[in-house]
Length: 142
Image: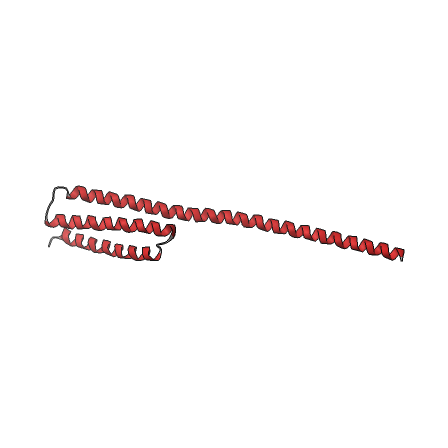
């Protein structure tokens, strides 16, 4: 066995292990935006497994288009990886932006609560002062 065959077998084993972990993570996170991103990562790892199989097959039997197909699968993997990472970034950016909006709305709600509390206190104070004035006038008459 040639050393490059051993390295290709090791790489194939590692990509199959990555595929197994990717499928398990997709099973955990299959809903929502993160699950969609993991789906593309799993598809990309499947392309990597195909590339490793092509490379290993090229060690035993040489076909004319094998190197080209390796490059195509590698490019497909890179496109899927970039797209999946972009989807994860956009999901976190959306959540972060949503949290910023939520904190803004929380500040607005707190300020409205504080304003309504001050208004209620002013109304209560004015009622107390008017009631006190009315009692003072009533006591003067009596």
